[in-house]
Image 1 (cartoon, one colour):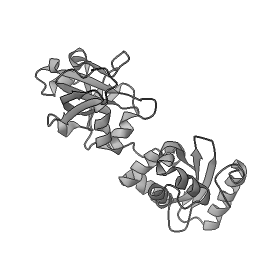
Image 2 (image 1 turned 90 degrees about the horizontal axis):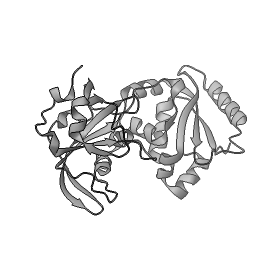
Image 3 (image 1 turned 180 degrees about the vertical axis):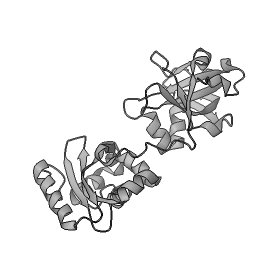
Image 4 (image 1 turned 135 degrees about the vertical axis):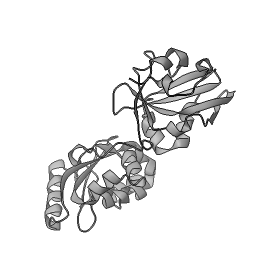
Length: 268
């Protein structure tokens, strides 16, 4: 066991509040941290009227939901100013090399809220792991376990996650997009020289992948609609040596089975 206080240079823990950032009913802070660092800072700067960050520094932790009782270090912030609608914070150099790399073992605050006295938790925290590089999203989960939102697929593709890219670039297949706001489905396929990676990359940069049924939705509501509602999965996957006609036939099969032409976004 390696205690956190044995590796960190924090001289006066009474100057700190610890921020336990957890799911807010809409998004996980870990997904926000991976997607956009300025948006993550906004999570720390948010104020709901109460002055919860009423000490000089904030020791910020992100619930690491892939594992139980784990928190990812999100940085030390100095409270520069307190406004009615938020905090003005400055990210500190102190242990900035461990942001997104230091994984802490801790049961959590044990009470509702996001801000707690640091000294009551600091000595109970243990070092679970220090990643070689800043955490940039989950490792490839396997073709049969993909059940990912648009924004997660977007992050994976925009950040060129090598494990995901290597896997998805080298398979053809039939995929499913579900609109979780209404249950409507779209069945699509990737064949020819473009693997699943290339096909999904098109969705990331357009929102609709040039599919007529989805194209209209994005035209009306914007790509943010896809980020909030679309979920991707693979129905079938095959080697790149597989004949294209088999992929096309299987795509048509799944359209019939899921009635995605009648009740979904498929148009052919």
